[in-house]
Length: 312
Image (cartoon, rainbow, N blue to C red; front, side, top):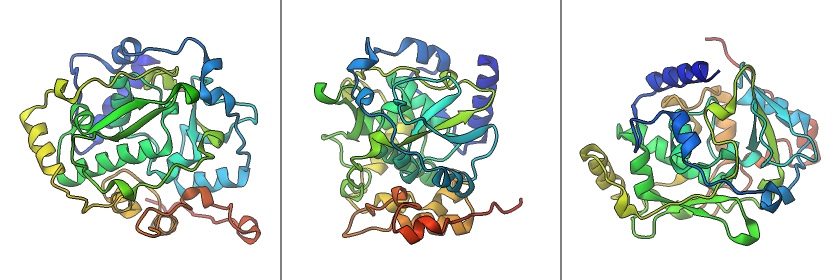
């Protein structure tokens, strides 16, 4: 299974526009997953343990499957009402509804498992806005032909553990000493319901533990001064921090741009719909996001949107 996953990851890397540069190039992804983690001793102490799943709309799941073109070996399925996101299942990865609104598409870009392995955390620990930052960074690097580098990401962004009152979550923000690479206020507030609304991304015949840390762990971010950039990374860093609040997150997460960069395979019709859901309101990304899919008025709920995958 590990060999199969490693082969899949290698193919994904070869298909990406830029090679992925990690801080420990001599370590395999599996070595990083096994070595770099500070696991919480008990899931019962985690805030996620207090948030059982409350999302049970099969029509929305079916709509997501069609709209985002989720194909075998992947399947979206409903989580059970009592499930918690901190409970690991090897072939079923917890996906919060808000993560789809944040621009994450499947299969995951290979940069994502490398980044999370480098800091030793599970993808289930990240709120939707953390995913927005990750996807915006990926888009900027691919769009500008910058090295898609874990070290570069960690030089720009910081990882922070949540407080003891909400133990287990990990937040990502621009480092306070680094000029932002896009306008921070173009990121919306996290929907407060995000912890309670999740589904599973099934990987038939696969094991998510070969790509991601299986348990919730503390992150140790360190100092940005400890991150040594290569010459290419340093040049990219210098260009990225020149943004001066000019770029908006919703521009970077435009579905047609994601399609152009190979990060999304939705139809043009679906891309138009997704972009409309993410239209800026009052200078910020729309609060409705994809949480509003089929969940607005009663008429909307009774009139499902169908996005047929085009051939080719």
